[in-house]
Length: 114
View 1: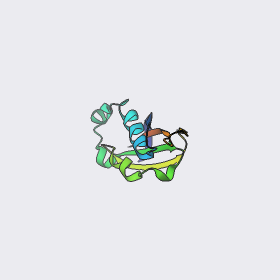
View 2 (view 1 turned 180 degrees about the horizontal axis):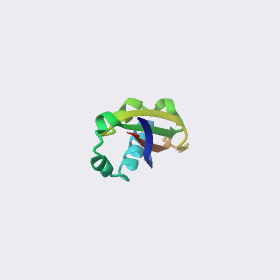
View 3 (view 1 turned 90 degrees about the vertical axis):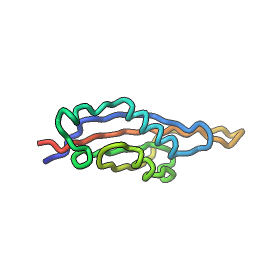
View 4 (view 1 turned 60 degrees about the vertical axis):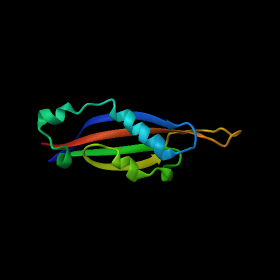
């Protein structure tokens, strides 16, 4: 069976103090997840452990500073893959050397459907 995208949710998250890219990424993913309810899984009798694929893309200015494993572990269902790419926004605070980090998240759900 082919995988078909059935949901795409977007979210944003930030870390206002400390420049923690993982914290901002986790908040962005949670923002995206709170926009969805996967009631169709029950209606279609889909087993999310074996047939639901979740692809997460995180956009931040320094992708190598995102702990991909922590982000992956934050997803409650599905076979999850996460990648971090250049995106998001850093807002400098030169007086205090304390940048605000803004992350974007795209959470894509794919199901194996005929």
